[in-house]
Length: 380
View (cartoon, one colour):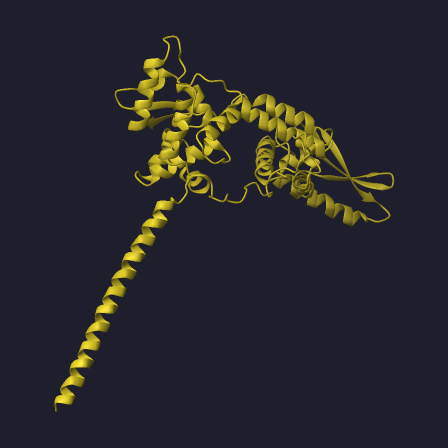
């Protein structure tokens, strides 16, 4: 049933009231103010304005039907059956942050943009934290929760539970990261592979560095996902469950062949190692290989792979192989290799040497001309 935008003026003792109907035909009243401060004419103008407002925004007539914050958030998460457990966990964290700042019984239409801004500031200042050490939230983490809040309240807007999204103007994108992360060269990769105790660990590292797989994707990969004839891998993205095809370069292909010969027949996973303690165990092997420590070990190697491929193949192809868009590649993955700086510097040195040689030759010629001129003057 549509909203009847007719608003009538009525009196309730010493107060003026406006009466209208919501979307289900229920009569509702709104107090306009005391008669001592408002004349009938002023109250009638307010009724006309309310009628225009309801005509332009019919959902406002159902404002009191907005659910409480806690009930809305719980319902939203229960209805999101399309997301992975890890993503659902992030939404649950965002829910906790919202309920730590707002009263769970507050109606979602009562949350203003100013209050939403205060919520973000509380996370940034450390007033509300979930970690045990009570450390301030990193900007990247805050942006994740802001984006989650935007998504959840966009659903409320679509369902006409609220008229606008109070979180829609908050900053939800962290600044572009500094691209000074570690570059693991192929020589360092060989040292790292030699330090690994098993072929499962060697392939885990090689798949991240030579095929650009995510850590979880490499752990989930099975021997059936390999197309031995065409040198390709079929990878299922953890976040989106989308399938993509990734090429196998010669070095990785040989490692896979060697590991396949050693694998037991009943073993389905390519990397049969435990998912627990990956970071701790990697540090042991990294130290054994004599390499320096770096952050985000597996993600950095995935970035290194994209950087290498981007110098050889079209970027749209490389981004497809990695499983994200070109914008994500440019912002979070691509790094200018050191050898390109050296290449440009070598070119500049060669040009400088050429100019210096040309200048020296010109100086010698000029000196010879002057010497011949002086000699001819003495002869005369």
